[in-house]
Image (cartoon, rainbow, N blue to C red):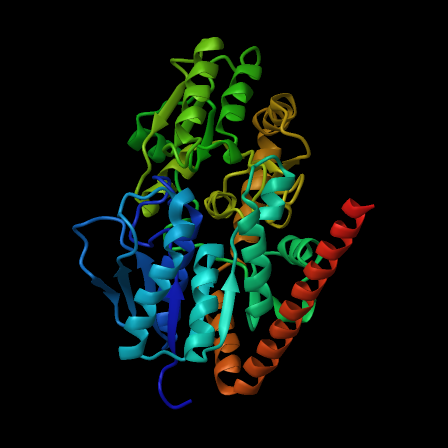
Length: 436
């Protein structure tokens, strides 16, 4: 291909222009912004399509050469994430209208809602499709988060239609193959990166001075306040440490997110009040992404007690700043946190177990120093530039070998027919059972 490949990146429900930690904005915002920026620097021309989320932002926002964000009107700007399945068709129609005037060579869908829209566009426009799911309904359901059945069905259909599926970690590959029966040869691991120009070791004393903190032990939580992320666990951990570290503080950076966000925030405040932690817990609102480095550098330990994480950018950013991480033993965190070397992984969502791990770090300066060194070394292998190079190569392979797209279409059509026939057989069997 002589010209720069042109890619349509679909991110229906969240925009790279929004500050992470607010509303539904989180690691996926960072992922798209950093990845697309790096793709542009490799010569890819990328247009990110997002649903219009306010009335003020321009229809097209040029970020840098080869990277623009296009806002598609679909439903009211302030629609809840739970209502977005209703407007997927409108979003797809808006993207199609744009692409008919501004053709692209391939589609990259992010999250299942974008995948449903991209599924339509792939067939309408004859384009290859790479899909990244970020989170999976079956995984979340298995850990206690209720997910609608239509999401599971949609994910399965999008996976069958996609020419390639990118996974963040080996754990996600296992989830895709075991829970969704995806063929391993159609999955590629493309681990996200960290901007090491911003996220790197720095003087803890200076970072604490900037944030108005003293010399006391500091625990850090960064992320959206919702049940999945487990922020209430972090307050309970602080309470568990009261006898050993009565002056320790918990710094929380984030805002309420999703339908349960306000309830989780109320739970957090209740936990703080119950244990008398009011003077020892500080909740800061979501921060511009690059400013988070100061928070990481100020901390002694970063806590990530999520019920599920396909990757875990917070854990990677903390490691890049040389901060040991105590995290849940789930998903991509199993790859990012090397147990006993860069932090500890905790098998259960138990504040006591998390507190035990924190004590080991705070009580052993030599271990903490060693973990800091190993964390930085481990994080150095994750860069957005290397991910962009791999994704560009993958997309070029699909673009330059259109016969692969046809093969995937045929396989998806065959699977769809089989599902229909199986469904009819099950209905007949059920009818026979009722008759008997």
